[in-house]
Image (cartoon, each protein chain N blue to C red):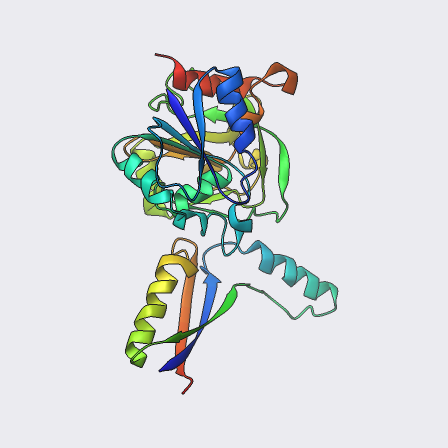
Length: 227
Length: 84
């Protein structure tokens, strides 16, 4: 699979992602500059974390108008895969590729720490090879991670099995005490209705090698690559 | 004709506004215990040229809808004033 990692001014997780895909997983990967208008034949587009355009106006609000974004939109409409992590998730919601929005953390603090995630569906490329309701330790690093969707959207997300991950306890219990940002329903990651666009606030690419002290994130990328 | 649009973008009333909460506490700490709630949005001015006020209004509406506010989390109001 050929991967493309988009680089906006202010992206800062692009190199981590490229390293993981190229060095750890041996995949073909190219960086795509935000002013490019071609995806160079990539099968899978990653929108990485960071602070695109300094988070001016709202996180992700300006990045969605970058010249590369109409191509990403068309790629998604054709059924191509798109994964947004952290700021990438914010950009994909601003672009309307994923439902809902990401608001300021309810406790007002930027939070950088490991959290526990429970996979909620096996019906996405990202989670299909993960055991049902399995638990992963993955770091978060964000100030605007409070996922929000109105009641109707939330009901629709549930009905269409679009919730990929929820924040949970180490034992896998989803409860408010371990919600790191005030996300509605402890939601940490979702996909679109067509199940080819994914967004999540936690950073699996930062937890994908033993020398980082944590390989849980690798399982998600291996799930993508498994035939 | 030249116009100026004064736009206010506010977090939707049903949503928690952490910035406003912090400022509410700050004001209470300064002895203003009467302050019950603060909500913080942003004020935006746009100067523009348009043949008529109606067209200026329509353009500002479009700017608000497409970029300046995110309808999922924010409401906006504005008024357009002639500068000439």
